[in-house]
Length: 207
Image (cartoon, rainbow, N blue to C red; front, top):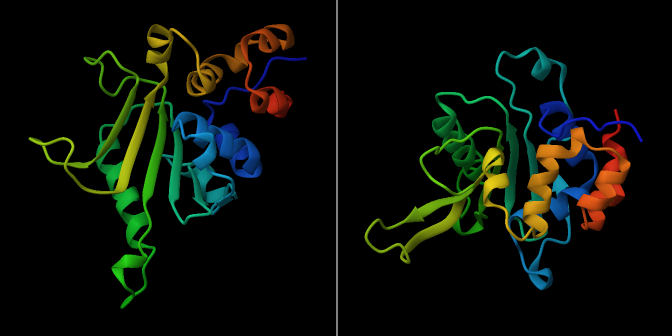
């Protein structure tokens, strides 16, 4: 089995996760650590195409947009390079996804949560020891007091997974796969991964 294409490549990332809902479901359930009994069972990818004009843009945003059976929307991205305005751009896109759910005159009660899942191949917060950060609207003095969880963002810093990983669970196995899939051959892949979804679909990454 030849070496695999890197999942950190924007085009590979979008092609794999937009064309196979089964593997996308497993990725979301794993990295969000959703309990098996309440995990996502189906998703619909809202932007599966890679358009020619996207390829020609100076700053490419090849994200995967999905909605689950409860109406929750997901923005799933891989960021290889660090851009100065990444936080503002991220907030803008999540808020736009939230606002685009309603037409003029519709009830606000119809709004569903929007969840960002971003994998960064750099450290956005280099002075912090963790690799997983979860942002949403909470009071600064009373962190348990939430205004709403309807807009939230999960950031996974891929470089930090190596030093933080002690007992590898499904989330950490996926992140390890992001970092090392393109380096591994068939034997090492069989030894390094227990997740049946990764094993089942790893041949799709063949170069």
